[in-house]
Length: 75
Image (cartoon, rainbow, N blue to C red; front, side):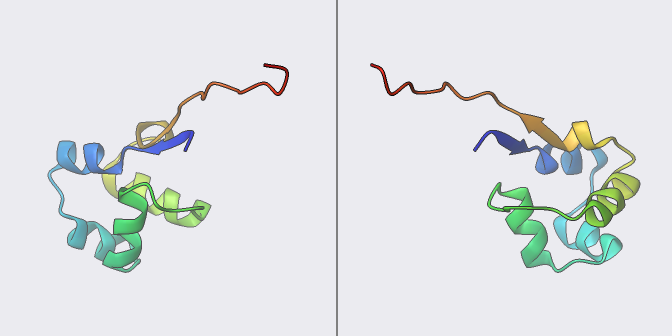
């Protein structure tokens, strides 16, 4: 997956547990776990905004784009 979620890194830097962050953001711990473990297919901007507000960070502190090698059909 070319988008890496570094939520666990920011949570560790801010010394906040998943349960506490989920409660503050207003999502279930299960949904936060899906996001934190890079299994999410999408995130609402309102959720991203709430996470950034609670962690006092920018979206780029949480989301990282990793370029993948493109395979060519001509090989």
